[in-house]
Image (cartoon, rainbow, N blue to C red; front, top):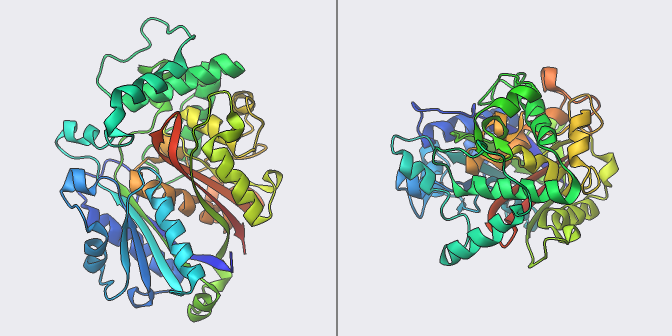
Length: 413
């Protein structure tokens, strides 16, 4: 990676922040990241702004990044607006790294933000409509929902309230895993219960209340086997990361002592695979590439943050990242292997279903957590002796899986 470092991270609380604007949240996150890095706006030589809903919800199309940066006084430098669904923030991070590797700058900023909670609820849900090929919507639905065929849906386990069709897709993915590997609803609930317990110790999390497995199972249904407490909410928030190369690190006096090294940053799109080809899953391909670049095997990973818009996402991604074998994510979750203090702690932040999921900020929020862990600054959710961390962040749908996936590997410097 040619000595690429994270020297500053900043994040707002995630949640239903009705009194805050996008620019207000961006300002807080960037301000915290700059302070953490011992830098100022004048040090930023390139900026990458991630967001997927600014155009739909705030009518700020075309140039949200340049406008957000000018509000902060970051001007006269390259600024890019990045949209890549739920992987927007991780994509901004990856682009910043490429600029540093190319030598076009020494210090770069990646920031993501969303203001998703607005008065018009119908407009809020509309932001998800473009998360797949809009020219083939009915075909998309048929292909994805068919994955759940063969598993009986118990009466009373489908919500009568409106929600995004993507929740039905997540449920179909669950049912496919259940019939293929024997995964149970209780194992999926164990992931959610664990993440809600982790979030109690994260002051920036949207929800900070612990729930038992039985309480997760008893929460209102969304789409079988998913219940409300297994799914992420609509969230507002912002997160920012200051990165630099070796030359930039020398310029930032005092930053070296808390810098975290980037070992790999991979963005991967999928292939036209079949359902029974797990070795071709886009997240698995991205992980293999990232491990090779980093020179680190899966067994050396100490902590992970993975994309869990539903709790099933953690099981799927733990398997794709080779933290457990395919089909073993459910039993591992039920044993407590993914809990802080367990064999391989996953989502110590609380994950998306507890920490929150402001789309463009999500990936950078994951990076924020992993940097905090590697610095040993996570308090009661701290993973002991954390030295190697991995992040997985997916976005959109194409075919039978995510349209794009990011995998990042970080190390304590």
